[in-house]
Length: 181
Image (cartoon, rainbow, N blue to C red; front, top):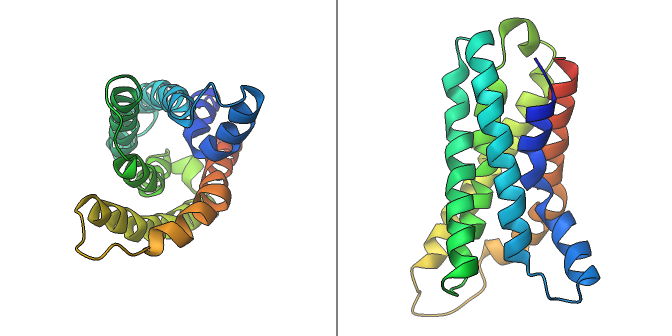
């Protein structure tokens, strides 16, 4: 198994780390939506290539399809929002929160000989995926306007999650890919 496609698939997990320097370097002319779109595109291409290679190596390759689907939805949503209309990016956040559970499924699609070496990253990503499912549910609830505007858990936990835990999932994907070389 080649680690290159899995490393490319992990690009979206570093979105906040990429948005900050790019926005600062471009003095705000390149927005966060463009950076997320580009990283989503890279992750989508890497995940499709990884899934294509996994078809020959593992009978559980279909478990990687949700990751490809979330990356595709993120590419479509971010591209549509960036270049056609401007709306709050609550759905964008909800899609980003769906990435870790899909990444756990992607890791579980590894071949048998490799799965033993990536058991710990799989467990960590699965636990983070459960946390992110709650955050995604809360973000989807925010799309429906509430009668009393009040900050929710997403506003408090979301930045910490995006800054620290999402990159951790990306690093674990990279480590899993290198371990299964």
